[in-house]
Length: 418
Image 1 (tube, rainbow, N blue to C red):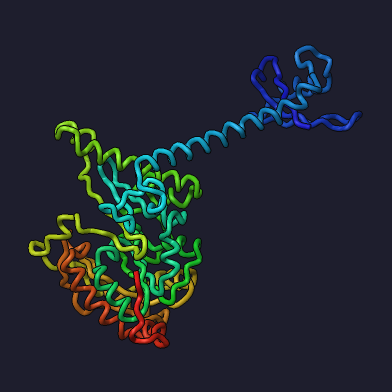
Image 2 (image 1 turned 180 degrees about the vertical axis):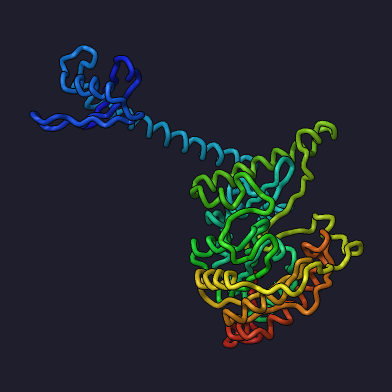
């Protein structure tokens, strides 16, 4: 039975130890839980251990026998009680500020104009925060289940979220009787975070479409660094904590965004600029399809003033044996059938993606046109650019052998209802 003795004396004041009681006639063992003692201190300790009659370490078997277990029990009760109280508090606040549980996807969800098919996914009043990483990695709400139902899943970072027109994707689904889920993750420096989401939840669509760009690093790199997000929403932090903290983080973020929005609408401009210095951009994500709602971004909606993408990269940009090996590892890890694609941006490089696809014997879709309009200097497509690109992309997808293979047995008139 463990017990706690406090040893006095010079040089070892404040030392605590747990002692293990052995059967009568056997010397009891002592294990120090503080720094190693000097030889002189060890002599004193051994002497006092051997002589239980010394008043300085008078030992009460009844008291010490129960002391450690009772202390640990009290500690665990406090710890569990605090965690439960925190979660219940967040639930209470979330219920008081969010929508009804019958409609909400998760606690405190902020819908798009009362449309609970979307959840608020981004805010930057005080710092740039994103919601979907916790939701996807920890399986919060219905997003992962909707992805599990998809025949085709799009993987990539923010270029994948900006490049596709949702209306055309839905029409394509109805035409071919398939479901497409956009699992793009904004700010990722590679596909490693998404690979972990996929393997964690064992997602197995009929076809993966991978945007194999190398903006900020190869999509196939094994790293979790972010290109623009930090703190609790960074990929590194999200994968470190468990489901309970993930759920609490999502609820807390929703509550914080609601408070910020309330203050932004009521504070005088001078005070607001100090308290809420960020732009206040709000973005939402669709639960069923994964599409981002971008129609409140001014530079996304102003294509008449946006120029077409200009390539600034030397097109003699081959891949490397290392990148090919990483691509093999990535596609083997997610399993199933994969095809590569490349969405136009200023650093577009067709050669390296073609070489990767050839080495892995994968289908590849690379547009012959790159001059789609962009609202941020060529990094992402704007609304008109996305509409034009989506039309071209879906036309190519219909002819892709891997797509034809998964739809060969479907009736042409098959339709999906969302």
